[in-house]
Image 1 (cartoon, rainbow, N blue to C red):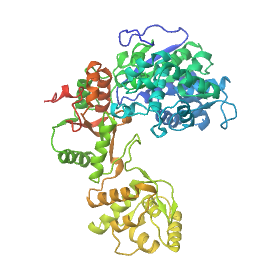
Image 2: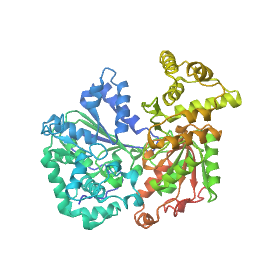
Image 3: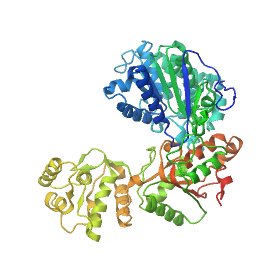
Length: 594
């Protein structure tokens, strides 16, 4: 099995003399991606490096899209295809090299005899078919099981087909043989009936894919490592290097050793390595040979996010030292003692009034669901970054019996808030155009009024406000004494969620708080990595079945807690467990600041 030889943190080691490798380490908010872009700017200005000479790799798709947008400033003459070609994920770069070298020929349509990439959550037909062939239960709606679902309650209820594919992905990311699957099950903490899975089943899945020219992400990473396709370029850059798995690291070493890259830049933070569920190991960033820069190079960077109190708490949780210094003295940490649920809810609302935006974070999805239900029942709009929960996000309206395009629930809610303020407080009598469009999409009115409304909104210049009374009475032909609650009863939403959405809107308007959905985010810690908020509320609950393992091997759990704390740019509230036992990571730091 893959292993890492322990060496002192930041040991530069040795590397091919032709290639210069620089490893920049910095903590949350220190601008790792910004620093990598500055390295690109240096290469451009000092060595004439063009975008076509660069290979920029990121860990996630969202980060990849962000870099593509930001690199336009350095290469304004580049087009979108150029940026897509040279800024990819690590997986995407491996696939690109295989297509370029004609090791893979991508299919244009299913059944044309060419290669097809499959993944759970989108191209699910192959997974469904295989499970039918071998009598496995499979739920395609679950998609790929990731660290966001690192919850023993959920994984304990996984159909055996979903569990099988999760174990297969873990084996591939760690470059372990199929015979190691029982150990993988143990390492993942996954609950599975081992009588339904054996080593032969993994070989059958491999044969199934090979005979049909199907490729999962890790399959073409493995092929790239076997085929050694040339990757053109002179400057190689990898961000978030602390998140690489054994297969990712092997790809990096292959590209490093091909001998054509003059300069390699790596960036990351070993304290934020939290993706062990899919094979990530902080040992790679700690031990890969490189010239040291940033925190390990003697110049600890300043976090532009975290003040001193937040950093001190983060270090206590980590039981180590951050790869950053705080932006300034200050910040606040508050321990919310166990008390009634309404009191905790009042605390969250108080933070919202003080800071305008906050995150409520839990370690496990089952706990996030309970927070979602609590806020929902009290008419408090909120969003989930992961999209795993039915929150106050996009809705599908219906008008005149026809399904409309998805709309932000916040646009509809914004109109209702404005209307309520106008009628009860004499507040502003206009709304932004997007609020009016949101309302128009969910109301059925007579055809003549619908045409008049559509024509008016379509011809209204962007940025011009819409009069509430003119829109409702003159354009839509609705009664003058209509209330927001009357409007809600007239709205139509697609499917079984219609009553639930209307109830949410009604409760949110009636409580008079006027909270917009995006100002409160509720999610797992893994889902918000890379994001920040002025105020962060951390649920210190844990799962009973996971406490023993976390105490036995606490390092990754400490890093998960560290990531949670360092999302804050001002305030952290630690909530004593409302659901389950104490987190073994947060319980020891109770009251440290006093």
